[in-house]
Image 1 (cartoon, helix red, strand yellow):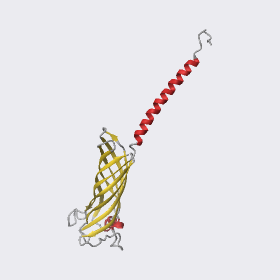
Image 2 (cartoon, rainbow, N blue to C red):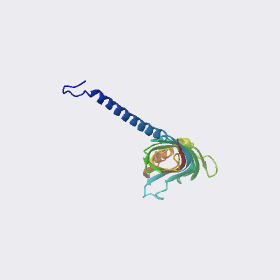
Image 3 (cartoon, rainbow, N blue to C red):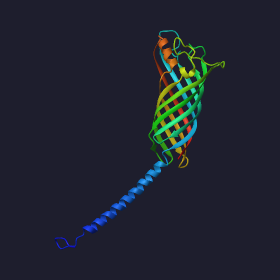
Image 4 (cartoon, rainbow, N blue to C red):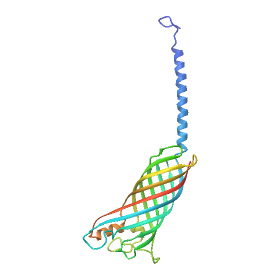
Length: 239
């Protein structure tokens, strides 16, 4: 078949060529897509466990014109313990057990209490691949510390004030709190799947019920700052 200029009609030939090229491109794209998703599916989930050091602090702005040290109301609570994490590439869940001591201010009956708590946390993360061995990730989220036990130096159950009519509350009611934290983590890979994870976090903590009550009772303070930080190290496995 010829066209109006007497030359063979080549539309059918060109259509076959275009179709073959299109199919070839689609096959290449399909192969690349499969490879990408296969790589992502092998790295989107990881699990691990290790140890942590956790610190909660409370600083008061006391009236300097009144007698006593300016840090007379300050408290700190240091904890150590094991923890586990579940990582879903852009989100991390963690669960830990905290054992430590709470150094209460001098106005409370017992100055030190030995505490036990569980910590639940969730963090958004953005993995940044530095090399085949290192992955850096910023973190933003919160931890909830649920205190279930506190003992005074004499081994008796520690009690805490939460209101004028309730001066002997248990730690689960008096001390439990939420801390909003930001920080960074680093995964160091020993193999394609086995890695060590380190994290450093710091943030602002909400006052617990005892701290809220004491703030209302103290006319010699302007404000209080609740804050805290956590350091973690663990071994993880990427599936």
